[in-house]
Image (cartoon, rainbow, N blue to C red):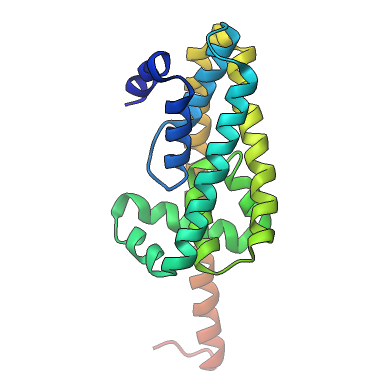
Length: 208
């Protein structure tokens, strides 16, 4: 699928970048990171303007993110229940909830930068919980700007090694998601252990 979208850039230019990044913000799995990296490479070759790549990518990310936030505000917690009912999304939602519970607004920043695969689900959780718009948006836009600049300029500055770079980015994101999964599992086990100990204490040390 990645190669298909990359093949569309010569024909559709930044329109395909805008669409892919914006739709990915809704939780639909599209290769937005790789597409932005490649766009930076095209800019280095003179096929695209680097400032336009930065502007289009940032705008698409910000608009898609706000669309996800406000959709979750309108629909409410039921949107999370629907995502949990889909096997491939259940783990990502749970990881997003764990990240937000442990890190607060820092989770918003992380999910819009180095942990971008869980970004849409953190945004949905923030919207469903009615988090203040300014609190969310301030952190999210800073993260969006950093993500945009990092991926675009990496592609621009390392255009000659783009294939190696995209593979490295994929591996990095996979490791990041796996790490969150591990932490989520450990956190659940820890909470169950604490609950079990509390039950023992309340029953005077007797376990049925």
